[in-house]
Length: 319
Image (cartoon, rainbow, N blue to C red; front, side):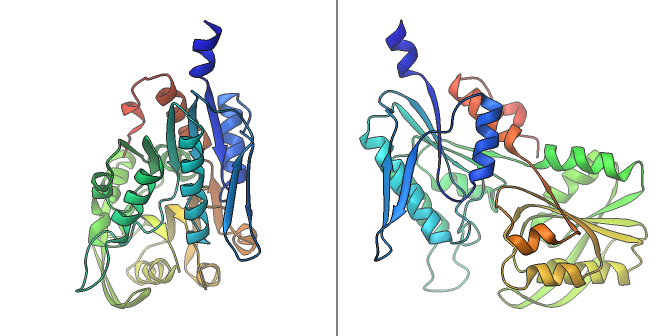
């Protein structure tokens, strides 16, 4: 009996991308964070060594592939390979933020489908299944040859929005046509109106023109999955203000916030930006009074617990 229990033990390990989130998840699960050493040789090669016995264990590796994306991705791949070679019974890659997700199709000739390549690498490295959050494109689940659970941060963000809105009349805004389904879900639960930003992008990370479709004569809430350079977000906030919005808020799951993002948010018409901790904020982001971080540790922890105990997690798929 003791041997049977040992071989089904839950073990959580983490790379270097989200150390605080990993600790919070372990605290929720009431387990200790596994011991793993991730370091670099002088030429930049990543070296991984697992310091705990994982033979027969149910291992969960928590790692966001956020900046520096390639370093964190390589850490994840090497950790998965190490656990597979150490005879773990099952290895689940828990990827709160899935990098390369925006490269999910061919948008021009002679370009890669990078999201598919990364999926192949994760599967080949030894992942038995994948647990992730708010994939930029749902079809990425089909890129994997192993089971994928794509959770949504909606319950976490929605609960907080309900608390701070306190009955205000609002309009939920999608920053582009591709995000309408997400915005409609928010609008339905908030009993709010729906509007769409029609944008014309001149080149990547640059927005040339914006037009608001819908009535935004009250508090407007922009809903998106990723904020990168915040060019679209700040321009959208300005367009909504110009269209008559009394206040503009925004919420997103993944705060990439690269380049001039923080400065743009500070200078924008936004009053508040709600984000989650799938990606740790850099110092400038932590100091920005407009940005508020919500924890998804309980959501991830519950999904890990149910996966380990072979229970359904369908009730967590609130989109």
